[in-house]
Length: 417
Image 1 (tube, rainbow, N blue to C red):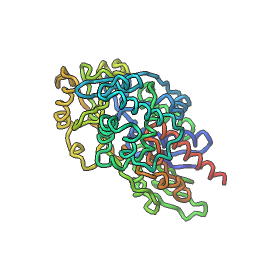
Image 2: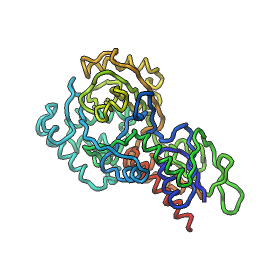
Image 3: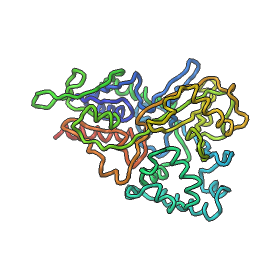
Image 4: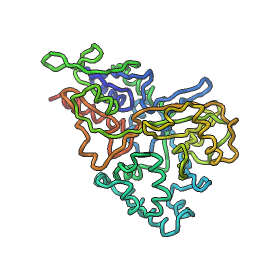
């Protein structure tokens, strides 16, 4: 049996591993020259490790991707980096019950109220029932009006922009429930895991076709219902591309209409530290970026030729003017705000910069979205598995791995019937 997999992100790669282990030949078609989806990366001549286009790490409870790494032989490093917030011109810790109690931006009652609300969300085993509520309406009641306005309203608005009023509470629950203090990062970067997984797939009989964009699927007239892709016959096909792309490939399939945001990162290689922590949430209004991630405050800079590496990250609607700006224009826009974060920071500290953008980076889950998720079996012998289907959890490599395994199990089960 041969199965075509459209898309070589972690969903496609994990599907291929599962199928290859069971004697089924997977053939991955990836439009880019590199597999990995949003987790793919780049490297420079004097770097030991690759760096992702978009900041990545895993949580210690991400079981599926950890199991995949063990299977393909990729080592995992566990770190406990510092998470901070930029509030009233100061970088502060705000990532634990103790740091919340010390937070001077709220009165004591508001701190206790927010801490209790976050604890309740943390211990709920399954928060899918919360999807009937909009986050912007429910969170002030759960976390307290003051805590919501000072912290969470700013973060949600900065992330979702014009779509902030659509986001449901189950999505927010998943972000709180899954978070761990300790984070994981793979040897060689996520590219290290991608390459090990590719090698495993090929060693077990699979194939990977990079630089091949699939724009349509056809059916043959054969009784067994073969699928024709790029001139080759397959017994089944798994599509792991974003829902809007899948809809163009198979127009007859009903896929829910949801909004997506672009992902954008401006990465700076600099000579000195910008922030104290690894991850800095910006709690100030009108900043042109959502988050600062100083990657080398978690992973040793010697892996990157001694450079300190900083992500300035954003999720943006397609109409946002930043998506039309050059790297130099973005840097000029951001520089005054970097100086506010660290008064000693100067443009001359920047050795090199890199700009990356990707559509469909962040799905926006509206209320009661679970009822709109399509069945993975979208048509006879055609399966769908993408980031709009990991709900209520947010996009992430662990969910991509689990989704890939789940859809591959369906293909295997259907083969027996």
